[in-house]
Image (tube, rainbow, N blue to C red; front, side, top):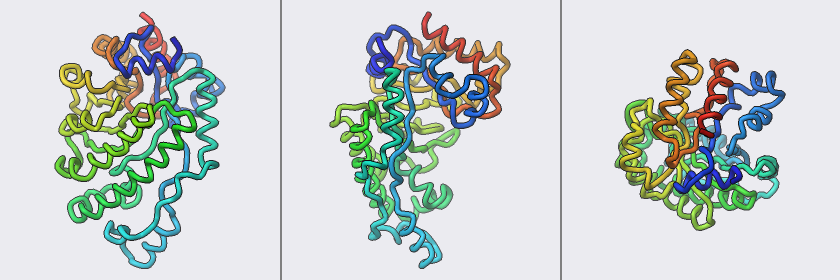
Length: 322
């Protein structure tokens, strides 16, 4: 069984020859990993990572148009954008050259490749700033709903080009959760995020590939909706934000898989190695053999030493094969 087959089976809840493993290790530790291994790729090869997290493609917005609106109005609110054509063309082939090269590299290693794209709340946080965006959800829900709908159309075009490049899964990043609850009213989620997200995910499925969600924090209040949208996998299922694995195993493992399990907020880079080992073994005891791809819950932080990173992945490598 190769890595693509292994991850595919884990997502679908089918038998695997071993638990698939991955990790978000590069963002903050590239220099440290490269110093010890020569490259992040060499680290991923040593531990036989089964997946690859791919970025790339065009940005969604025309910065020149947005800068002009800011300059002309002295403020920047959703109502000023509803009738403005500020989206880029997602169908420019050369914009995906880097993505194609990355997918080709990992497919030579038979890895499962997933491509990330922003969702709606996360995307427009980049435009308005998160504090303003939260305020605008209360002030301009209709206008934001229109902007989200236009983002969905752009994303569908982006998705098609990613699939042509060889993506096995489209990974939509849309952080909705704070540490103990959603960051906004769940009614708003159902009104303006759910229908647009479902449209994108339905399109992804119509092309025969998987769809996954990244959302940090506690999203307990919309788990039923996440299931209705049809996501095949979610990341990270953040236990440290009050999302119990017991709830997943009792109510949701028939709906979607989990990518995660190795917590960067409470464990990796933070615990002494004896406690880190106990924590990793605990998670394997709960999730091994389930619809689970072992992964970090987010990018490993730079306070994690290479000694701890190697220790963790030596253990993960062993437990995945027992």
